[in-house]
Length: 151
Image 1 (cartoon, rainbow, N blue to C red):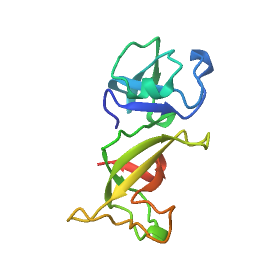
Image 2 (image 1 turned 90 degrees about the vertical axis):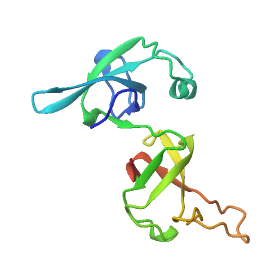
Image 3 (image 1 turned 135 degrees about the horizontal axis):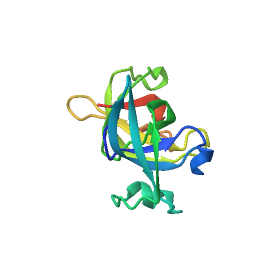
């Protein structure tokens, strides 16, 4: 179940509302209708998606009643998340927790947002080591919303 004021993106077009797949909204209210949850999501006509995504302003130009399969959550920077699948190339296993270090616009239209996530051990030592011989190495791992979940 999602809670209020979380940022979400549409997984499909809503032509009756003139909203396209990938539109960014904010959950306003949550209630149970029969046996499933319904979410009132507010959308803004604002063109700058990054500014709207970062904004706490609740000035919505339209709303839509949606269900969980209609949208996916957008994570915030510094949010603690859990890895949903093994990443053997990085020696990371499903269930490990990390911190979102950066939220990025993805080049893949099917995956609107990507996340740079840092994983560390109980002593705060990064589990994704920097390689001095590789200028492309990073202490973070690039992941998508389908790879992580909120803790």
